[in-house]
Length: 208
Image (cartoon, rainbow, N blue to C red; front, side, top):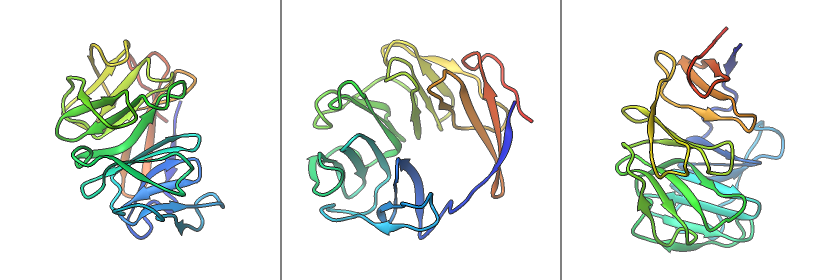
């Protein structure tokens, strides 16, 4: 199984493409699209810095992080923001995973320290003992966490307590977990991406 995807609005004015519902983050800050990515409008009111390298949300709870921002949280969908940890978040990247059952529990990828976890709404963080990584993913509410974009891909099936290596397709660096238990990984070729698929938690991969 698999297909080829072509990027649409992949980088617009420096967007880094960290999506949550209708919001996308990147170097210009937060942008909102109400037409599937055809157009965007800035949504940076209240942000102390607009260089957002990591972003995640659950409902109206939004988390953003960056070198000049630290870790900031909005409890009202981005209307207002508060910096909760000025000394953390400078090397966060990609998605911030928010536990849907406890929005105080979040996990982020750190390109220096590996996977980081907070259980108090981003105020304090602990490293979960992985290699440096730039992407985290989970399809089951943080019970299983996938870390990729570093020297190797890793997987934890106990919420980040222990980690095992995960083999990705050739030339792939990132892995994304679907809610159906499937794993997806892409290999770039210019503006096109070949998507690989695994139905057995990474034991085997198939592509077009």
